[in-house]
Each structure stands twice: as structure tokens, then as C-alpha cells.
Amino acid sequence: MEQQSLPSSSLTARRQTSVKRKQNRVIDLIMKRSIGAISSIEYKRRTIINEINYVAYAVNKTSLPVMYINPNGRSTRNFVIDDILGMEVNPTESSCLLVTSRYNSVAIYNVSPDVITFNQIKRMTIPHDPIDINGTPNSVHWLWDGTVFSVCTLDSVHFWDSCSCKIMETVKMPIRVLNHVIAAKKYSAKKYVAVAAIDGHVFMIDMLRGIVVMTMKNVENRPITTIQWHPTNELQYITGNDNGNILLWDLRFQNNFVLKYNDDDSFSKTTSHPNPVIGLRFYNNGNSIISVDNMGGIRTWEVSTGNMRPNYYEPVTLCRLNKSQIFKDFQFAVTENLKEDIAFMPSDRGMKIFDIESGEHLPHSDDIPLPVNCATYDTHRFCVYGGSNDLVKLWAPARKIYV
Image (tube, rainbow, N blue to C red; front, side):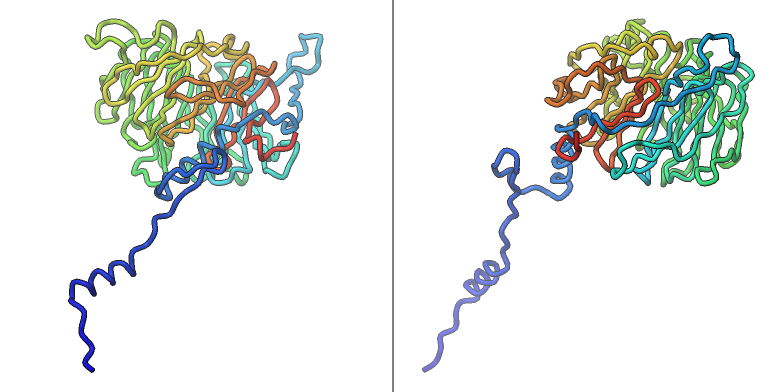
């Protein structure tokens, strides 16, 4: 008996059925419900957000007190607290934390997950600054690969070898400077360091040549109190000044800014903030900016238009150090690239952690009677380090810490 052959259309349908795969379903283990079929990138983003939602203060994770011997002997005390001014996690090794403090020092701390006490691996003295008798540094940053770190004082920028912990290059600045930021990324064509000056200028240091190669002219003759480089565009950066204005700059236009951030569409003389701007950070993959003034006022902005986003945030209560240190950059941290970004604001009572879009504080962001000076976010471990007077403290996902 001859076997009847199936129509070609039926064979095609069978083949399509045999190779058709089921969509992967992702289950939210906390809410016990399906969240649908999503990409691996989206799944990772949601996992990170879930971890950050449980960030809380780790009571038993801290450093030892850092005491500084009084050099002039005029005080009745032989030792004074060496307040932490700034910090940054090593971009390649989350076990190392770079810390600069008030009395002329920079140190590398061991913050590995398996240690209870964050010990200093190395502590170095910054060369004497003839302008500032205390030698107070104002900012510190790692290079993208962790091989070099830089420290800025009022008259110089020092570049250190992170292995030998010795100075490789010192660049003297022509005028008093307040802070700096490294623009050099892994794939950047230019290895620039932007240095903000007290007269409103921004000096560009070429790291490969060790000299100032460009000067961005001031437009308001006001001290630039905070500066940040765009996370993806190596030609642009933003500044916040003592006049309350936030300006976007481009290296291709040295004599004028590109955009002024303002809540008035007519671009009148209204300033970005009613008070001096002391802190700036990019977030949402560089599409938005969050800013803080010296009264703790918080605003967010669209980078491309310069317009303020419609939102309201409770003012952050600044600690004594951020109030008393003139022109000190308010170092806070953000997640930067999650689309639902989280901000970590040092305050007079702990670390204020909130969702930037809604302004809502996270459930585990409870007030604690602990002044925090500065903060830095670890993108690998989803934790936050804060400087509390002379101590390094940790805020980490609550389910992963032991208290």
C-alpha cells in the first residue's frame, strides 16, 4: 500500500511547532509572582534594584579611629580628629577604598567583605601646600584601571602610583583651586583632568604630558564649588558655582558655556538654585542631573534641555563639616545607570537613601544618630561607604550583613 504524502504546508507547520521554544518566565521571589519574560540585562537591573532596596546601616562594619598629632602644640589636646573629606572605591577592586582626610593625608583601606574592621593598607602624607598651612586636600579620585590615583590641594594636583604609593607627577596650578575630576575612561581618546578654580576658571590637565593644556574661561567670576564629568561624553562636563548656577560645558567651546540649567523657560537671570551649589551628580545614564545647594535643597534636571524636572524632595540636613568647610564639595553618591536610580545623601543623621524619581525614602533608610560627611557607591557589591568624622562606615544589603 502506498503511503500518502502530507502536504508541504503541513510539514512546514510541524517543523515550526517542533522548533518553537517556550518563553522563559521570571519569578519575583519576594512578591511570589511572575514578572513576565524579560531580557538578561533587564533581569540584572531589577536584581540590583532589589538589592539596593534593602541597603541598611551595618553596625559592626567600621574602621578604627584615625587620630592626628597636633603639629603646633597650641591646643591643650595632643591629638585631634582627622575628619574624612572624601573617598572613592577602586573601580577594579572593590576591596580597596581611597580616603582623604583633613590633616594632609591620603590612605588606602582594606574593605574586603571578609574583614570586620576596615584597616589602613597604606597611609601617605600629602606634600605641604604653601597656600594652606593645614595642607587640607579637597578631592581624591582613582584612574579607571586603579593603577593611579590623584589628590587635589589648593595649589596642586598630585598623581600617585597605587602600587608603590609614591608621587609620579605634581602639577602646580596658576591660581587657587577647589576640586578636580578625572575624565579619563577606559576607551577615552583624551586623558584629561578638569580642575575647578576659585575665580571660575576650569583648567584641563593632560595626564600623559603632566601640564595644563587648556583653560575654560569663567563667565561669572564666582568660585566653582563642584564639578562632574559626563559619564559617556568625554567632551562635556557640568559645574556648580557659588552663585547658585549649574552650567554645561564643552571642550570645543572654551569661552562660553553650552547650557544653563534653569526652572524658567525664558532663561531669565533666575539662578539654578537660590543658594550656592555644593554637589552635582549625573544619573539615568547621563541623561539627568541631581544637584544639592548649601542649605540642603535638592533639584533634578534634564541634561539635554536644561529644564528642571517637576519633583519635590525633602532638604537634606548637612553635617557640621559640610557646613563649616568653605567651598567643600558635597560628596554624595547615585547608582547612575539603572533608570530607577537611587541617591545616597550624607546627612547629620545617617545616610539618606531615596528613589530619585519619586523622592520616596527606602524602607531601610532609617535615621541613626550618626553624622556622615561623604559617600561613595560600590557598583560591584551594591553597597555604600560613608565617612563619619574620622571613621569609615558601611551601608549594605541587610540580608548579606551580620549585626
